[in-house]
Amino acid sequence: MKTGRNDPCPCGSGKKYKQCCLRAQSAAPSDPNELAYRRLSRELQEFNPKLIRFSVDRLDEVPEQPWMDFCGERPAFEEWGDEVLSEVFMTWLCFHRVEEDDALPAARHYLERHQRRLSPMLRSYLQSALETPFSYFQVQSVDPGRSLDLTDLLSGTPVQVRDGSASRSMQVGAICFGKVVQVDGFALFDGVYGHIIPAMRKADIIDLREALKTAGVQPSSGEDYTDELLDHLDHLAGATLPGRRPQLRNQHGEDIEPQVLRYKIESVSACVQALLDLGTKGTVIEVDPQYDAPEDDDNDDGYRELISARLHWMEDSEDGWLLALIHVDPGSIRVEVNSRERAERVREFFSQRMSELAKPQLSEIRSNESLFDTTEAVDRAEIDELNQHPEVQALIEQQLAKHYDSWPDIPLPALGNQAPIEAVKTPLGREKVRALLDGFAGGPMAIPDAIMRKLRERLGLG
Image 1 (cartoon, rainbow, N blue to C red):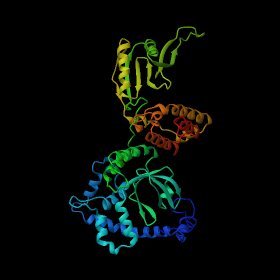
Image 2 (image 1 turned 180 degrees about the vertical axis):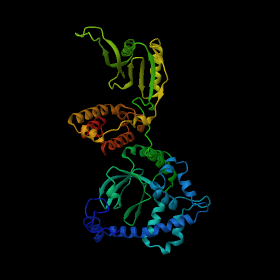
Image 3 (image 1 turned 90 degrees about the horizontal axis):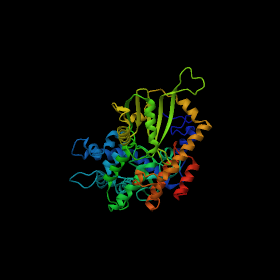
Image 4 (image 1 turned 120 degrees about the vertical axis):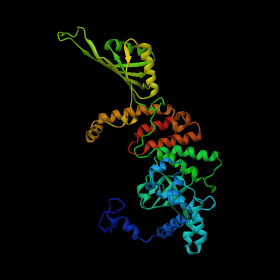
C-alpha cells in the first residue's frame, strides 16, 4: 500500500510523510557521495539475491548444512534463529564460508566469473566486502535519517556510515556487530546483527580485543578471524536470550540459590535469646518482636510472652549486608538465605549453638525464577504513582548513593575480579571502568548525574 503525502511517515518520526522521508527522497543530493550511496543501495537490492543464489548453488551438501556450520558449537545462535541472525549468516555464507577443497568464498568466485557484467561500483563493493572483517562498532554521534559516526571497537578506527534507517533507531553509545564496507568515498553497513548490544558489554569486547592482540591478530591486517568473532558474539547473545535470566551473584560473589531452612522449636523466647547471641560473633541482629500480654495487664508492667519475631542476621561491616532473614513463630523457625554457602553457615550455627532448642526439618531450594515472579497481581499504575512521590524519589536516590559509594571497592567479574579503584591504576583497566560507567549513564536505569560525577571524581575519570 502506497503511503500518502499526508499520512504519518513510515519511519516512525511522528511527522507527515511529505515533511519527512518523502522530502529527503525527493531532494536531489548535493553531496556526490550521497548520490553514489543511493545508486549503490538500489543496485544492491537487485544484486544481493543473485549473490545468495550463487552461493547456495555452489554447495555440494544439503541446503541446511551451511546454517548448521554457522551455528556449530554456538548455542545462542541456534536459539535466536535466523530472524535475528539472517544478515550475519548471509554475509558469512557469501564472503567468509569456504569449502574443504576450496579456499575461496563464494563472493570471490562470483567476482572473478562475472566482473565484466558488474558496474564499477558493485565491483568495488564486492572487493571491499571480501577484505573487510566483522567487528563491533559503537555510535559516537548521529545525523538522524542520514548517517552515524562510529568507532570500530577492535581497531579503534573512526568511520562514518550512511544509513537512513539505523541512524533513526540507534542512539549515541549503542554497540552493534557487523561489517562496515568502504566504497569509493563512503561506507555502509553489511551483515548487521539484529539486536543492539548493551553498552555495559563493552568491557567484554575490550577483553576480546586484547585477546586478539595477544594471539598476534591485527584487525587491520586482513587476517580472517571470523570464527573467533562469531564465537564471541554467541557469548554476548547468550546473555540476552528471551526468557534467560542473568547469572546472579550476591554481594560476596556467591551464585544465587534461594533456600529456606526450617526448624521445629518449643520456645520462641529461648530461641530468640539464643539468636541474639549472634551479635557477639561478628554479626548484627535486628529484631522485630511481637508480644502477647495477658488481658488483665492494664499498666503494661505485667509479664508478656514473646510469640514471634523476625530477625535480620547482618554482616557487621560498613555495608551491613543481609546474610539471612529469620522468622521465629510458635513451633517453628524459618530461615531464608540466597546462596548455598550461607545456608551451610546457618546449618553450622544451629548445629553448634541451638541443637537443644531447634530440630532441623526439610529444607527447600527455590528456583531463581522465584526472585522475579510473583503470585500476586501487581498494580503497575499504583507502583509508578508511588515512585513519583518526592519522599520515595529521595529514598531511592539515597539508596543508590549508598550503593555507588561502595561500588569502587567491590571486585567485579567484568574487571577480572578487580575492584574499580584498583583497575583504574592501569590504562587497560581505566578503559574498562570507563566503559562500565558509560553503560550506567544511558537508558531508563541511568544513575543520577550527581552520583555519576562523584563516582568519576573518586576514580579519577572526571
